[in-house]
Length: 450
Image (cartoon, rainbow, N blue to C red; front, side, top):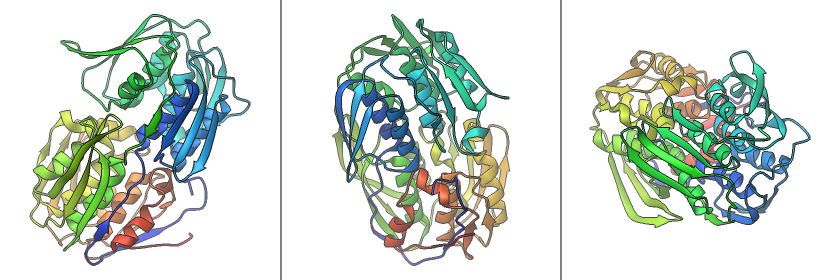
């Protein structure tokens, strides 16, 4: 289920040691971009290891709607017969991006400088999220938008028939905003320049270069300056999608808090703009090691081994690290509850505008489970109780947010009383095999229809 239908309550109970190999799905960020950039080529791009969660499947459907031929060959192998930069056709229907903020914002960017019109919608969670952070810079190219109050979906974009290149300083760290502007710049003449004061995940830049775009990156006094030459002819590629570090976070963190656990998570992408959680866990005293470090498809990759770590302690997570682990703060907060002392997370206001207000959602759930939390607009603190000392016994609202649901399912594996979420169905948007994978490791997760 995708979070659109009947709620699926889930319960996670204390379990024995988690043991085995956790083969998590392909990276969601790279999967989205593979489909979109494949659609902007002339010729066939072949993709292996694509994440087949609802979010990515919605992006595949969107690329078909814009005229690309997208084929599922089974087993995570896909092909995209692209239409070229500026070649998108006007879709016949509304583009439904489900729960995916990444999907809708990147697709908006990819179509914004083509003279067509498209209407976007999504589920209740996505329709509550602000789109102005993307549509404002897209307007600089000449794109027009009409949406609900507050810049929310459903929204219609009228692409710029005669786009102009832009120079844009990203106001807050956001890979989605940066990527949307760069994708829009593909069909604008001349140079489009994006400046980010703090580095965010760089998959778009890496993949644009891999597809043959002329892109340069400089570190200056202004920040990280990315210059893209417009109107290239992108070349189709063969892409092997590495496994998703954001999905790997859940079995890794579960192993750290469940006594006796020893879990290997193979083939995880360790791009420095994505690996902040693992650095943070090691600073907290986690027994987390990298094995078989290597490079695959231009991305650093390693096997992660996580073992039970009863002596973890709270730390101050530096604000500069937030962009590299923004999706992992919910499950980090769970680990922090089982550490001793205070874990202080600063510079995290982006969490307020994710699939849910993740600071509020986690704070409410943690308090219900007996953990003290302090919070502000741009920070929060979890006061850890130590290994085995978290009471649990709460039912938490997932708020149509897959990461909130999975974080509390991980928490229930080590609390004194089971943890429940009111709806675990959104988990399929990013990690459709979460339940079976955790069960094979030894978790005790049950679900029922509401």
